Length: 393
Ligand code: NZQ
Ligand code: ZN
Image (tube, rainbow, N blue to C red):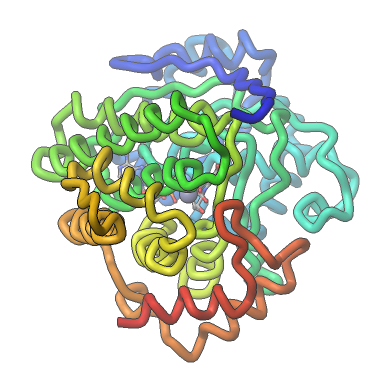
């Protein structure tokens, strides 16, 4: 295990009626005027918005609102939110929703105190040095932004979908997590969330760092939990036990509990961000396409790790004579699992085209430190193109 630091200061309030504490939590973490950030209306339809605003009212906390966050959140709304935040004098960002609402709130939180274009912080022109406090009321188990140290925004000027620099400053102060609110998710979003949290775990699991027995086993336990819970949540959307498992797994998958002390990969995420930037597909859907292709491409780098994945996560039988066969079986089972969740498997299924592959590679080159990427296997431009070609089937 490598040396590490771990600072995960988010306060989690998990379970039935947790949202009733929102107003008190805002106060406890220093807020006196909230900017509420949410998406296209799901939180109004499922009651989360009413419950949260009731709680703010009860705690005597005034608020202003920024609604209309789209999945793959755009820079335009961040600029609007920064203006609004300064104009009304809000001192606390409160997101209700998923990764898109949370990431918009996070970008406003470090954009508002910065005297310039918030995108400078993404390009590296400016350092992330100050951030307003952010709170979260989570309604979808997926991105893990409720406990993470980063945010992902699409800059409309160029359609670049980039992650912000990682910083503990932007970890939410609190996250209210009532799994009941996730029962209204459409099946496709439930499935995309499952793929995203699995990917967050696998990006950490496929590592070259030796002697990471504890985090290996934690990763396997989380993956098995998703494999058990996601089909149950799809079969019965009101299965609250399955919803609760998925919700807490999404947080543990990405607050780095299972990534400490080990080199991590993140190649599939880097490639997926090019897919969702170009095709505006759901992040989890893009991951379901690209992750198995990445696995196929890099498997020979460490066959025994892939074989362990097949056996410990998917219950495959170990073929000691030909371990590669076991390794391949794990990838096959992952594909089958994604298919059974109703997720896409090919570029075409997310609206992609083989001709766009060079475009995605070129866009990646424009990112600071664009190539090579990937901690497990270094991916250069030709590798990225080859992996994306494996998605054309
Ligand atoms: O906009 P509304 O109407 O709210 O609908 C949303 C949206 O259409 C809907 N939804 C959310 N909760 C619901 C619901 N519908 C019914 N009932 C509910 N309870 O679901 C759709 C997707 O929402 P979104 O917030 O986009 O989902 P998710 O949490 O998957 O977030 C995806 C974004 O997070 C980024 C992704 O790249 C993507 O932009 N990520 C952020 C990370 C981070 N900050 O740490 C890490 C991830 O790897 C990821 O990149
Ligand atoms: Zn992700």
